[in-house]
Structures are given as C-alpha cells and as structure tokens.
Image 1 (cartoon, rainbow, N blue to C red):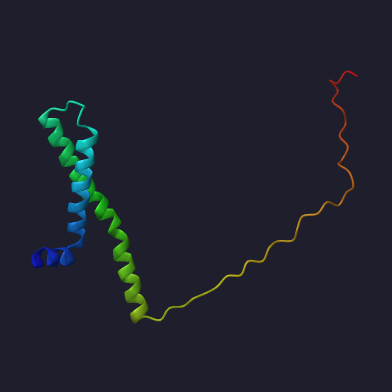
Image 2: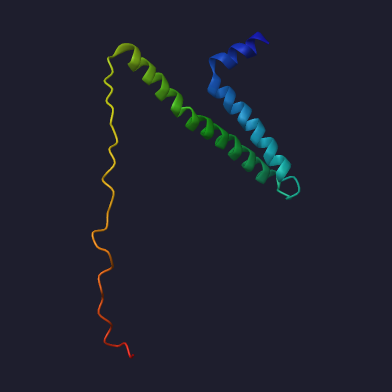
Length: 110
C-alpha cells in the first residue's frame, strides 16, 4: 500500500490518466455493449479512449505549470501593479423637441 501511495504522490498526472482512462473505458463498454462491435473494433475504441484520457490529463496539466511559474515570480522578483479607473462617458441627450421632418416620397399617391 505504501508503494501505491508513493507512486500516486510522485506521479500525479500518470495516476490521473489511469483513473480517467478506467472510468472512460467503463463508460464506453457500458454504453456500447449492445452495438455489436467486432473484437478489432472494441480494441481500437478502447485504445483510442485511453489515448484521449491521456490527452485530457495532459491539457489540464498545462495550467499547473503556469501556476508554478507565477509563484516563482512572486517569490523572486519585484512586481509592479497598476490600476485603471472607469469613468463613464457623459449621457446622450436630445437637443430637439421633435424628429426632423422628412419629405414624402414622390411615389406616394395620396
């Protein structure tokens, strides 16, 4: 049990890949059980599902690297912060009391 705990602690992305792949394969098998795939098709689907789970964990892991870099910057360098104040534009107003009159169309037969 200690070996598994150490592996999980030392390799979190591989552990997440394994867990996600197992769950995705179970869902795949459950939802496609009555389709009638051949063994070759099942193999292709399962391998593709496992690779997709790996890609998902890899993409989710991109954010973890960025957070570590931000923490390093805060600890080692001086940070400049600037603020921006929003000042709303003046409200639109109407200078006239009525709309501008428009001449009737020459095609209008009254």
